Each structure stands twice: as structure tokens, then as C-alpha cells.
Length: 408
View 1: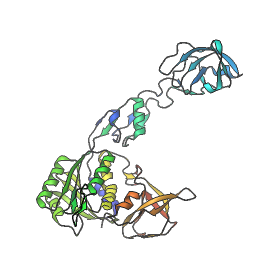
View 2: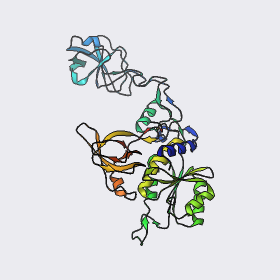
View 3: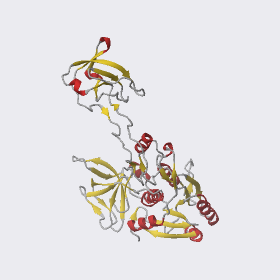
View 4: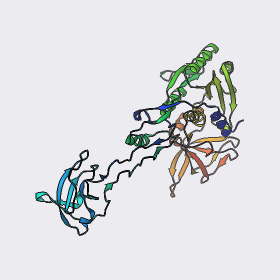
């Protein structure tokens, strides 16, 4: 059997990189930057007020309270017309440009507006108080987003502030299908004996949609050689990556394996992991193919460990694997010491604030309810096998963004 790490490394080494191009800021969410985004102008581009209040000369407030003449009102989006001189102030709104001569802002709560255009400043302020200086956020030449970053909403906000659409990798189109005569449409109301609803395609489609990549859904393909041959050929012709489920276990019909061997260069692996040991990887007409196990939890784990990182790698992402943190087991567990085991767990906190993991339900590879309830994987490495309550454990946070490379 291949180790999990060796399998991941082989897959990443075989995946092609996608071309890149500039996109609009509005279309950048979820894309991966292919080059750094560098600011060409300062942000803010002018000194402005951080508060509603009065722009003043700080030295005028040293002996507060003090009464000052109000020159004018300046709202956000307008431009001051009168210079602030000793003994005067300008009423100013948050975000409005600082008038010439002023070097501080007294917030409105610390003032009293008098009649006949005067204001009482009740507190003393130092120069720079409540002023957002030009370039205080960004200066020209600053790297706003590094290369290889999957853009989140917070990144998009920064891009919008500097007005630059990023150069990002193309999105890989992924073709998906489920195989097997026993699989029926999820909308089937009454199951015939021996049939099961197809949860795998719904799972794959949802995970790919969350990742932001286009999906070609080829549906359910029964155990018929001609149908399988046509479906895989169509998938390779219309997608950058093909992902199928079923037909890769040792006891399955040989049709899937036979067809994949006919159409391309595909190997059938046994990876030392649980769930998800049987796995196929290769190419059809040069298009990468992932043959995932048919059990739905095995599909999920295999997607997380192999497919998702491979797609992110194609897009040029720096971090490919989910964040891992250290926690403790909240119960005794016994697993297969010859495999890397991914336990579905729920999380609580101990008195020190550390995560404590307990199994979220049954751990068989067909039990989707425990996956739905899980917040993370407790990863039990090869050679360990058993953990006792209170033992340290690695938690893979599959609800968190990627935070690791292959080597970290």
C-alpha cells in the first residue's frame, strides 16, 4: 500500500498548472492569485477625520476648556475651503478631508456648540489624534495580496480599496459521475430492493461549488461497458479533471477498471488510509482522472486528501491542505495501526481552552450522519492505532480554509 503522503505527493507532481489572466474585482472571490497585487497609490489618499467632531490645531487645546470660532462644516465627500488658524476650528464629519492648518480632531462628544458660530473644546488633544494620515493603510509598492493566495471577502475588500483587479489562474472544469447499477437518483421517493440514492454526486457537486469551480455533471452510469466508455470519453473531452465514484474496490465489477485501462493511463492504488483505501488515479487523453471509492464518507475523505488539493495546485495556490491543530481526545479510541485513520469528531473545549474531540457517531464509511455532525477529523497516524482519553491528537479542521502545504 502507498502511504497517504506518498500518494498526495505523486498526485500533485502529476497535476498541470492552469493559465492565468486578469479579472475584475467583482469576479475575483475564490480565485487564486498568479502574481502579487501591488499598490500604486496611498490609501487613504488624503488626511481625513476618523471621527465626527472638530478639526483643530492641537496646541490650541492645551489649556482646555477653550472656545474656538467655527470656520465651516465639512462633510465626507466635500473639500474644506477655509484654513484652520489659531483660535479657529472646522466642524468635520468622519472620512472628510482635513482642512489645511489643522492637525487633530476633537470628537463631538467632547465639545459644546455655542451660539453665534463658537464651539467649546472641553478636552486637550495631541497632534494626530483622530486623524487618518495619507498612506496610513497602504503606501505605493506595498504587496496587498501575495501570489498563490485564494481570495476571500477580506482580500476582495482590499483590492477594491486600491482599484486593482488581480491576475488569477483559470478555474478547472470538473466532470463528475457516479457508477453502479445499484445507484438511483436522490429524488427517488420509493427505493426498489437493492438500490440506494446517489449521495456521492450531490456531495461532489456541493464541494466543488464551494471551491468555486465549474461542474459538468454526467449523472449516474450503470455497469454497462459501452455506457461507461462513452461517459468517461465525454468527461475527458469536456473537462480539465474527471472525478468518478465507485468501481475501484477489489470486489467490484471489473467494468470500470477495464474501461479506464482502455481509455487512458490509470493506476489502481491501495492507500494506507481509512476510510478511502481503494483509489484510482491517472489520465484519459491527458486529462487527470480521480476514481474515488463508492462509500460516501470514503468519497469525502478522498476528495479532501487528494482532489481538493490537486485542484488548488492546478490553480497555483500556496496552501493546499486543511489547517491542522493540536487537541485532546475525550474518549478512548482503537483504530488500525497500519493506516492513517480519519475519525469524524465533534469538538468541545476543556478548562484550558483546548479542543476536546469525541466521535460524532458511527465510523463506518457508509455512515453519513456522523459526517454531517462532525466538525473535524481526529487524525490517527500510522503506527499509533489506539488513543486514550486525554491523549494529544491532531485535528484536521475541514470546515476551515487551507493552511498547509504538502511539507507543513
